[in-house]
Length: 274
Image (cartoon, one colour):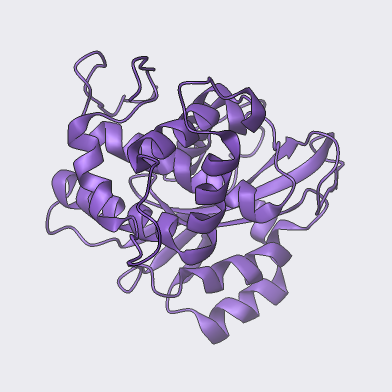
């Protein structure tokens, strides 16, 4: 029984949202590890950025926590929990409002030493990986793909868009993107395989520095949400599967706090942009 609590721990109300969707297998020896402690340990790693072996001693052993994390990223548990929470958030905040738009973008981040799929993004002066995401008009994650930073955005999009299969995008009619996705091969792929139109949002001519562009700022805000998790300030994972799993975990943690805010935290609200 744990006696120490941390800000990243799930509350009783949040645990009730995810507990039914964590698989429990019949047979075998009785479980001695509390699954809620495992979830809290994974969120602790996510929010603090600590290494697995530096988990506080009141959590289950790091080998146990890692084993559950590895199982859940492979068997679809994280995907199931993420998609169910996204539906709840969407229903609570925009009831009876189908998704008609989405946005796509990428973020290049440095990596720590080692690991697969590493490269250099010369435009951003980054050695590491690139996170490609698709979000809806609320900034909620629809698809994620992690590649080497050297991979072209338009080429990666052809591998990312198929991941929208099974996602609630049946009524999406426009996909907003920036000029990095102005690619004739991608135009042809969208025409052949998608039911939505791709709209490139360009910078106003003669503008310098950061410029707020209609619709497109929602995906930038999602990257900012991910940045609140120290594990994601760099790509610290050995594999792209782990990198994608932690992005989904960051969105799960955010949606839990939005659906069931903790008393110590202010209720989530959108801020108007300048």
